[in-house]
Image (cartoon, rainbow, N blue to C red; front, side):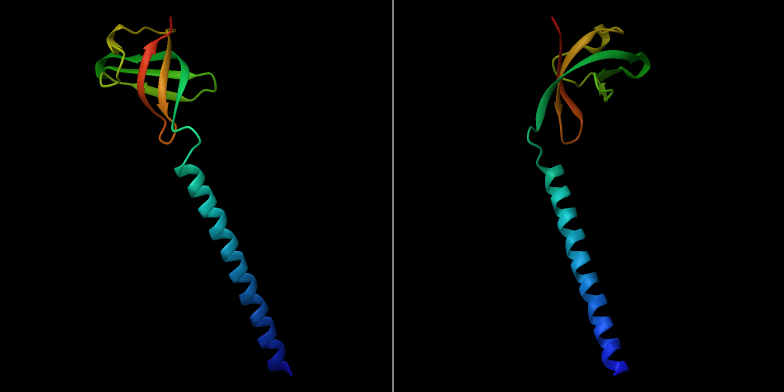
Length: 107
């Protein structure tokens, strides 16, 4: 009788562990799929220049939510040496890695 109760308890515990593991794996897979395939891989973001690092030819911009991006001389469409603080730019951003693909001055 005791052995039977022990086996039942063991089976219940193993079933809970199996179900819990499956649920965790499914949730993890959903998160991975959502991160891997966003609805819009690129998007345009209105940003403002807030920092210039002339020694390294870097310009940092920030969008309305506070996300920061870096512009380098390799950034297409803009000359980083001509930018100044407070200037408004429109950046095309890769949503998957938060990288600026190109930028242009807002006119």
